Image 1: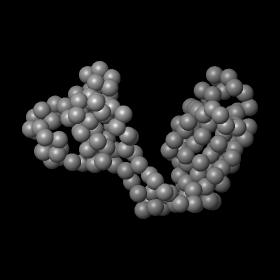
Image 2: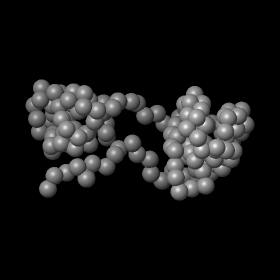
Image 3: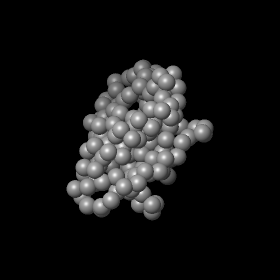
Amino acid sequence: MNEHNLDRYDLKILAALQHDATVSNQELAEYIGLSPSPCSRRVKQLEDSGYISRQVALLNPKKIGLTLTAFVMIGMDRHTPERFAGFESAIRDCPEVLDCYLVTGMDADYQLRVVVPDMEHYQQFLLGHLTRIDGVSSVRSSFVLNQIISSTELPLGHLHRS
């Protein structure tokens, strides 16, 4: 399966599994209009070719006491491959960090999405971990007041064939 060489069945499978990966193969097959065996083969092929990278359970952060989300902009003191590699290695060890992006066009080098129980835990994370990473020269935090949209579903419309 070549990159973007997906037919309408593949696209329906991807959309359905993004929405609910717990759907049975039988239900999925009925939804997309194939019999179960070809549907199962297609799912396996989508996995093998890297279109489906993994399947996870999405937890409700509030139910497990994670009520504070922060977007954190990190500035580095030097822009060297070694400095960036050191930061990236250290940040991977922080379970509070859900996303880390190397960014451009801002007064920062990295943007993080951090989830913690409360402001006290954020302060501990900030002072106990984040500011102790070699090369971190600035930290600017913004806190989420209300989440308007939250999705893990990627848009697939650009892959439809005319």
